[in-house]
Length: 138
Image 1: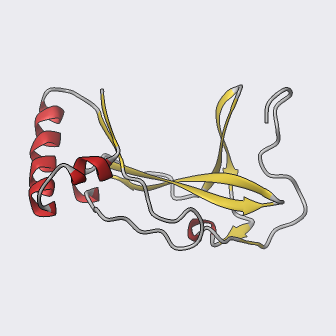
Image 2 (image 1 turned 90 degrees about the horizontal axis):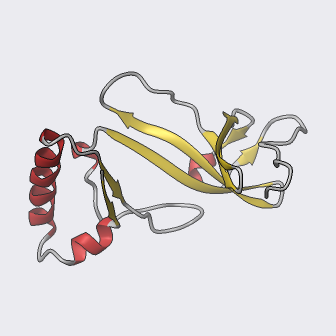
């Protein structure tokens, strides 16, 4: 397994973006042939509201996951969604992601919200808690 964190730093080392895309494609093809799983971390500009990126290499990715911050009930929360999965069908729901002392949890679909991926969601559901805290966790 190889993790490149982040693509921004990798891009800064290359003189031109076009060369980076070609090199990235060749590198990922080689690693795939060798049976190596590669994770590319591509940070987005903007924590809430509109997000942007200087680099789009999603066409060489087999799967693309989007992690997004959003605000609900006076707390900063994280959402996870699968944007692309080349190897088969994938779930199209947006779910809450919680990482705490007990590990990683993925909650129910955030169906009571509209606009989670924009970073400025609107709550349209009933009054019930989202992903509950664990005993002793945050």
